[in-house]
Length: 73
Image (cartoon, rainbow, N blue to C red; front, side, top):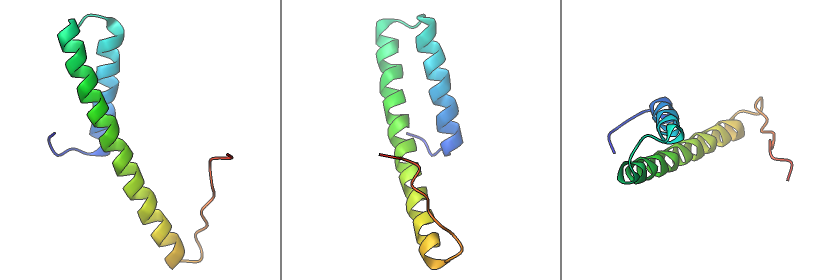
């Protein structure tokens, strides 16, 4: 996968979703799009995890920041 930003990956995921939703790609093309989409989701998940870790480090270093758990579970 080429070097890309989080935002570019999200835009491409949106494109893939629209293509698949339209139902126009062949079965083989749909499979390729699905595989690309799964790789993009993996990339975005890893990027978000990295950012979250960096935020936690900043929060520990600076008492002014407070992390709030957004997941009530």
